[in-house]
Image 1 (tube, rainbow, N blue to C red):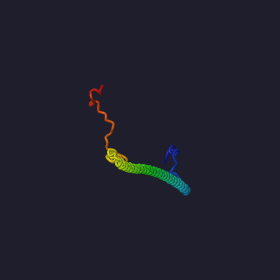
Image 2 (image 1 turned 90 degrees about the vertical axis):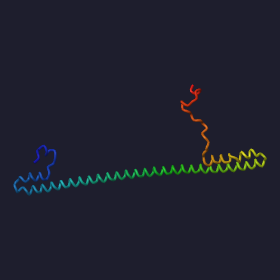
Image 3 (image 1 turned 120 degrees about the vertical axis):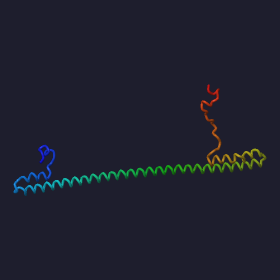
Length: 169
């Protein structure tokens, strides 16, 4: 049996109700069983409603998680497409720069070679030699390969312990 304090804080179960009604005379047992059946039906209805509510909450949680995942996937897709587009633009600019250097190198080499022939036929062999010599190879290499094998023009700084005595002051 439950104490009065416990009864005030919670509802009695069907078994507790049946125990209380069992103490009555047998004539009242039918009434007790009807009340017991009604209480069991109410408990069942409450439990079913609670389970349906829990299932609906779980469906809502799952739907929200699916929506968040779909939004994240869309965002990743958009980001990836933007990254790919930017990479394609960089590659296209690099290709245009490479082709421009190739054309400029060819035009420069052809111009220097043609100039060398013209100047050589004019009797200035030293100028023809300059145009057709190492510069004919060096300048197109700079335009086509975009590099120069020359050392940097700016000297590197020496550490203080290696500086000459007159530079320390």
